[in-house]
Length: 151
Image (tube, rainbow, N blue to C red; front, side):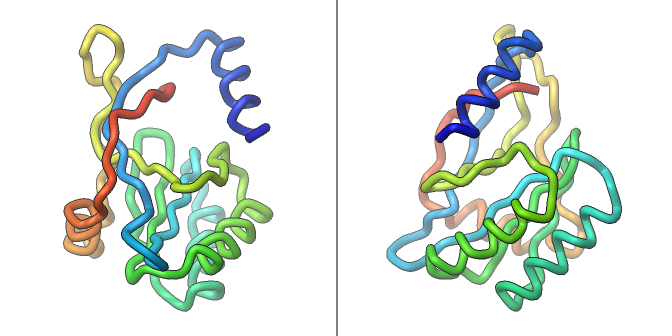
């Protein structure tokens, strides 16, 4: 909770423009959770380190999705909430991110729009080898909402 307010303060002080997008939750039913994680940089070392930590902890290859500012990671198949939390905590300990733990986690799937309705950040783009898995998850994860964030 503290991380959420620190991020809000940082964005307010920097006077970043508020934006809107559609996000999907990582909750897919009882004992069925997907890991979401977001890294806002293009550092190849962080990319490889994130993939390796997910492989070690959850024993699966993460779906990699590129954004304007960095990379999103998500997992399929689904896991228990405890498994997802352990992996998230390990990633957070080793990778610099402004993403914070909440239940559920939300992941942007649409472009970001400013208050004038202009697209200021395109939709996340899955790594070509993960396109089908990404589309399946986005279609089948049940909870979607309009989400306020910053660019």
